Length: 81
Image 1 (cartoon, rainbow, N blue to C red):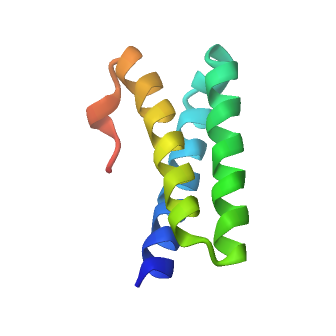
Image 2 (spheres, rainbow, N blue to C red):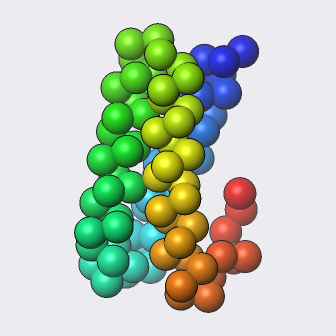
């Protein structure tokens, strides 16, 4: 159950990263986007190690950073959660 939840969260996060990159916000907010990307990599790493709690936590941090970009740009409601 925990593994499925962490995996699903990571998959959604990777989609959201691509969406923000396609909008061009990854360049405008390069430092924030890089942090979110690093947390995504960390999430993937922990998932592979079987540490689902840490994987999910890293995903949450990345979501927060990406949501901040969308809020600043007025696009928060345009993407599925």
